[in-house]
Image 1 (cartoon, rainbow, N blue to C red):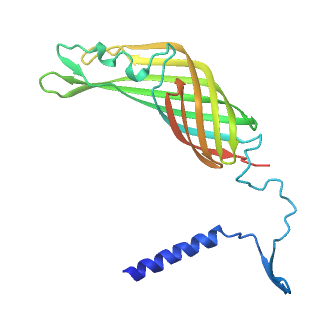
Image 2 (spheres, rainbow, N blue to C red; image 1 turned 90 degrees about the vertical axis):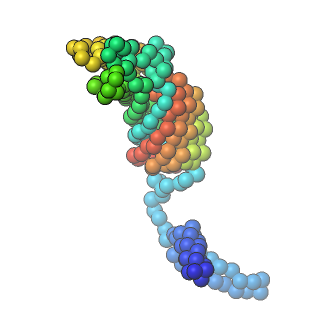
Length: 241
């Protein structure tokens, strides 16, 4: 067993060494004189290095990125935390029914165009979905499910104030329109829907993304996109200098 383990680890180490080596070196020559032995490597000439990928340089202007993320702590247009706002169960007839705790889920879709190395201009769509189950007293049978939805659309601006190759640190701001829709009724009654409009806003004080074509990111801030926001993204035209 130990022998198999040693063989396996040796193979993994060899693969790692080969993968980490400079695969672009095509020809190797050794020269010897009175001072010692010299090894020279020659690489094939590449006439077009303009768009070559470099993992030590930031993104060039013209890059597009798409992001998907989940968040916690989203706010409505009145600055209230959606996750801890007034319960959907307030409309339940407590004589015959009782509600469960509210559960909220936040989904973000973002698009950004890097007009400059440090400036991205784009937009965001955020959907916050809340659900609340209603149960019957005595039997504890679920008889209804209440829904509350917040949808906001915002133009966004992202400012990358630290750029070190595949690592970016940034701040962002967004301002747009939000719509709240919910059921103001309980089990056994007519379904009554209400709609509210509000000014959606979002401010991220600190954002961190790691990666070039595919990348992961996390953001901390205040607004419709959540207090804590984390996800992944994909970039098109991610060229470097």
